[in-house]
Image 1 (cartoon, one colour):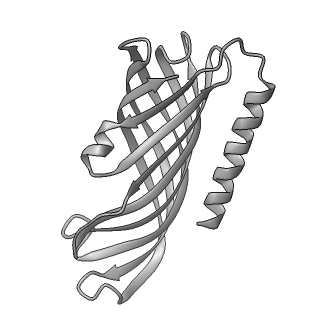
Image 2 (image 1 turned 90 degrees about the horizontal axis):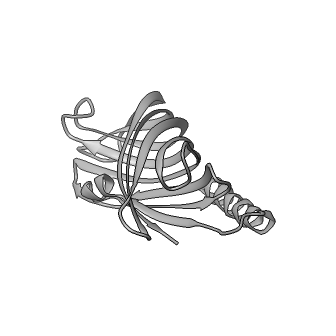
Length: 187
């Protein structure tokens, strides 16, 4: 977890340093939230900064602290730094996105994950998406984004009935689809 925090601080430092040395006429920033993640009770936000007429630098996070009951939870903390290439101009039209991800998770869902087990660990990976942004007003945009990534997830498997009996450890290589319906504020 400390390593993730260090990387986030390094990312913000580089983001700030890049904004000081940029020759852009106007700086544009955005903050957005994925409404589909909000529907799963996951808090999320993403900030981005204009680098040029076609590039933005992004940093997103999501956090779900909830236990629905003893056998159902999707607790996680996820950080996703990335970059977007905009085909027309930034914050308007189509884009492709490349992103990295780092996560800490504690997941259980009786019957869905191969029985009454809980999986706990951390993961890292990368992916790509394609999306489109529509201007709603001077300050508001709507985005739709879809893509695929690969998550390398070392895990420890526990029995849910006792929530402490370790069953096994291993590593999953999981394809991770990304689907987003973002509400964006520009400033």
